[in-house]
Image (cartoon, rainbow over all chains, first blue to last red; front, side, top):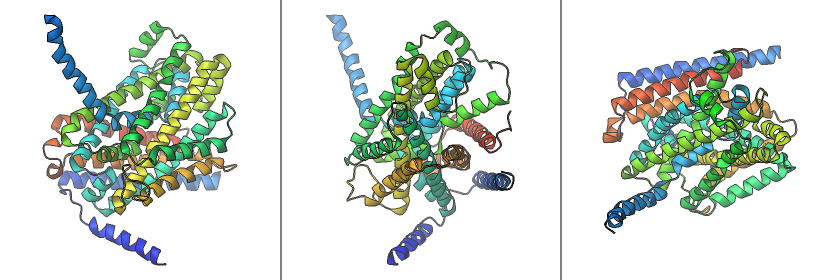
Length: 58
Length: 422
């Protein structure tokens, strides 16, 4: 039990250590990250669609 | 006498330079040659069988592509002394950090399974049962990493890189027409016209040139080796040499299958080796040995890429210069990845083909992100200082990164929807 607690504590510590992005968030960086988010969401949506297609139609 | 006296100092200087390079040599060559893993060998064998020598020119273009991307990891590692996973966490925060780390874990594990598939198939040609191959590989890899020295690991890995050159004598054994190779291979052309299938092959070749784990591996290896900013020029040379070697090996595989198996549809490198056995026993043997070696080298590097990344983030000791007692979690991650992926191959009816295909799809979720982070980190003035990307490097690197993202994404789509480019 304490091991699981330690593991969660470790995750929390990592999250707190890297809470703030150190890189300067200029307009270009923000735009790049936004495009990346949109790209990844579209890709995941496509994968889910394909998965559902395979499951329902074989 | 005067002539020899004048020659002495330049020769001594050159010899010293070679000696210095041999100390620095390693991460670039190892990562590049390991890129010719089981999946890569299959792609090149299928390309040669399908299009003969006609796409050799395209493979040569991949030398600068691989070089420019991997060179950035050398600079980033030497300047920041951080691996790629830690650099992403630090630069972009926990959200992107966890995304990259978990994605890397999934991609690496799936790729490891495909390496084991390649290795077991290669040795099955010689009658070795899969369980012996899996067990033997795990023991061999334990011996390679458990000696407690990065230097020993690297030199052993370089030995396996040298074995990857087995395709070169293999190509000479099949007596290709040098005139045809030069005439058809070096002049850019699209044999039979540009159609969907050709596009698929071009995408597959690019997809095998840059894999996500390569960015993580080389940067961590640069850090573990202890390379400094002053070593960057040698690190660049090492990376360039590695990218040339990897493409030369790919070209010779294309020559072998283009000469002996023209028009044959190749689904796996093991199938190519079996087909070659029927025509020339030695060439088939070379291809099978090369496939095993490629899988082994890929497996060593991929499992290390994950262990380094987890060690960096969780704050565990994560160096090959440490003994197992000093870095238990680092080695535990390494062997957990290795043993679980090896065992999957032994499970009867395991969906190995599906896993092999799935690697390509998952990789396109990580590769674009890792490449975008790489470019952004290389432009960070605070961290990189004088070593940050110049305008020219940004233009070349940016063009390459955007091209890789588009083509690898289309490749991923073509795996999801097989009839897309037919």
